[in-house]
Image 1: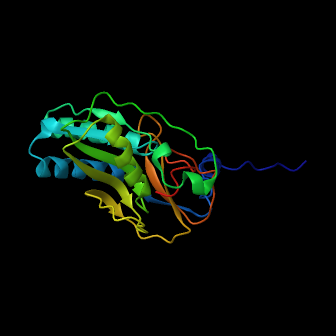
Image 2: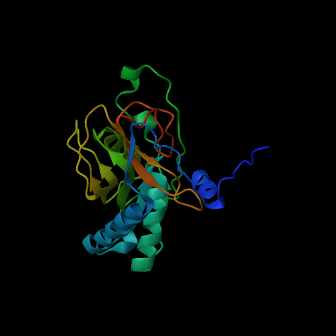
Length: 218
């Protein structure tokens, strides 16, 4: 009877460790380390630009703005030594395309710990494109008081503005085509690192904080 040769242990290990094929049409353009570097730089820029750190009030736009704002609050405390209040503000019902879409929107959480009267509010979003989400956030913000000023943080600015919205602090400018999508994935905690991906096709299976839906026309 012929003796069957077994593959050496090294070859079996190599075969088992072959990574799965990359997601079709999806490219990582910012990994977790790159995102954290951008947030740290933005924290420095915020404190350099605003002398009165006591008046700062961060407001995250869900979904993708929430993990980024939490990172930003941590960095601001490490650099400036102050606890900055953080709110979460759903903009869904303030969007100007509710009637156009003809869909029932999915509402997200709103958690505003206090009024924004006389505060310097810093809106935090993951991806800005048309500017309509930021405009809706400014409208929604007025329900919580009269801020002294409003500034905007975006991890990614992908262009395609439809409204004259200015981003004060940008992690990265990424030129894109109109039919491409940019997503923030992960929560940035434990075994769920953050990453920004560029999708060259409409694959809605790729989830994450900025999941498809009302955040698409950003």
